[in-house]
Length: 215
Image (cartoon, rainbow, N blue to C red):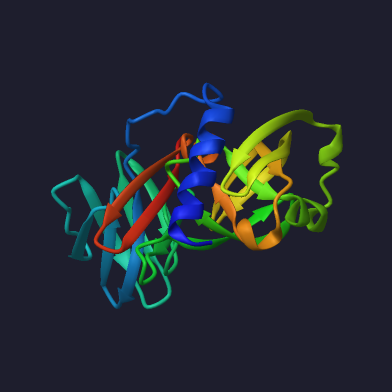
């Protein structure tokens, strides 16, 4: 989807679903293993700080590397110990890289079906085309019918409930969304809006975006 079209659709979805969710701003502390070695590990702490620790060392955030091998690390956070492999975290998380346009494209599993998606903080809800909805198996015609203004004119939309939405290790249930009757080319990717993003912590460092499920 081109930038102008994406912005127009995002704005329409935001207006349509305004009030569905209140965004929580508090960040939950977490640790992710970035690399492993014998008696050492590189940890991403709170989605922003990369700490290289040796066994027995503690980061400024209070994260202790108890032990490490090339297979896993044992870390202690606030008195709790976690055995983590490479890429694993103390809480469910997803790490995304920006493309050349600065967009965070990913794969979302909606009701267990993998579909292309893009992170869109300007959209209040999840938005998908009728073609994508049919592929997932969503009977959107049972949803509440709404009229949505898009770049191609007014279109019919249906409010739906998505049983599960998963990005990386982050899985949420009962996520509000809207299915738009637009050509597939106008909405080739699912817009991941705030009815999903409002329940995760987002930390951006350079071209990396980390989504962490709140406890």
